[in-house]
Amino acid sequence: MIVHIVMIKFKNDTTKEQILDIKNRLEGLVDKIEPLNTMEVGLNFKPSDRAMDLVLTATFNTKDGLEVYSPHSAHQEIVKDIKALGEYTKVVDYEK
Image (cartoon, rainbow, N blue to C red; front, side, top):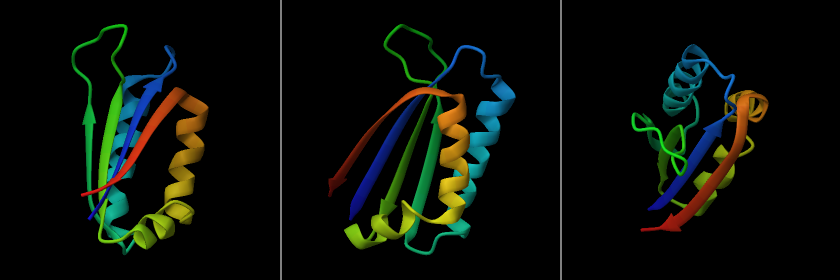
């Protein structure tokens, strides 16, 4: 199994509504991208200097599944908005 984790720090002027919209759209990708098995999205509730605002954990059966997900148009629409609203992101991909 392949696990894909992304952590996002949003810009200070990003609203809670915008972050919730990103969360909901990310969760909806499971129904749109076939090799995507699961998508769990969490929002941080404990602010600190080290904290990120959103984390997603996605799983795939194979590395090829991750390669289908990344350029998929439904995913890229959300990535475009994350780039506009986000300060920075961190990513980890690993095999379980």
